Image (cartoon, rainbow, N blue to C red; front, side, top):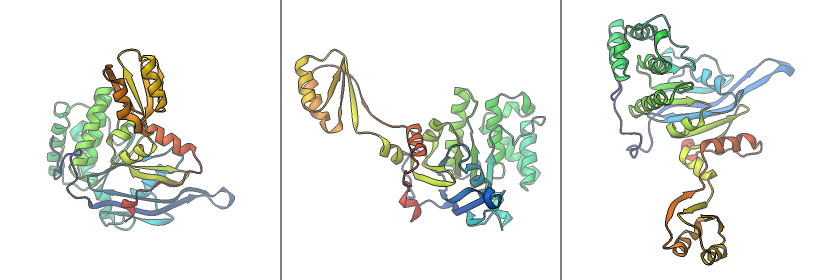
Length: 334
């Protein structure tokens, strides 16, 4: 699949450039509402950077400040403090910056249901000052790439939820943005449609577009993101590589599932090494792995599994721990 953007290497291949061009640079954003005793700090001090071709999952509980932060990034709400830069342009002072941003709102709210897919793309392209001929050409290309060519004359309201979501992404790409704001891109989709949308997100990032992803589906965030930023009470409490953050919260314990019962003699040796035996399973520290395998030989081994956390475990741990010190990716601050 190709996209109307310069193609970059696969997201799963090594990065050629270890320091990608910074597309979004938001520094020390602050926003409060109300006055006096009723004053509420929605965003206290939020800084985010996203490089070209990178997916940042921006996560937090309801009321944490995600929406306000996104609105400040998108130029919809002026921050009380801090700065936003999109490709070096300030969306609050330079209107050209807004042409670099595409957005897909949760619930397909950026589509007109009585219009056809191509009409939607042409209309929203016009709002982004894309000439009609160019918008139509790009629309036809996007519909083909997203597998919607045969639906180009079908009113949006008659499309499936998955097709509507694909169209919403296509509409957001018609003006070829460098920053894409994605809000719950797979919410309410069946398994097949969800996988299709996730593939599109990967392809868009591989084509060089920076993506800010917000979702409560943490398995989706874990699968798609390069980095994670978690916000709580208006402040970033963790920002790190997705893989490194999960590794940090993963234990060093392993489990071996044997194909038959473990005899008492072997069980005794395993216990001497600090392991435990329950039925056909051995639980142990990673330091004893090879010694344990020698003890178990030649018993059949069905599975060896590490005690690995997932993004849900990490998120809940950080959100519930009110005294957790911020976890930052130092490389992003250099």
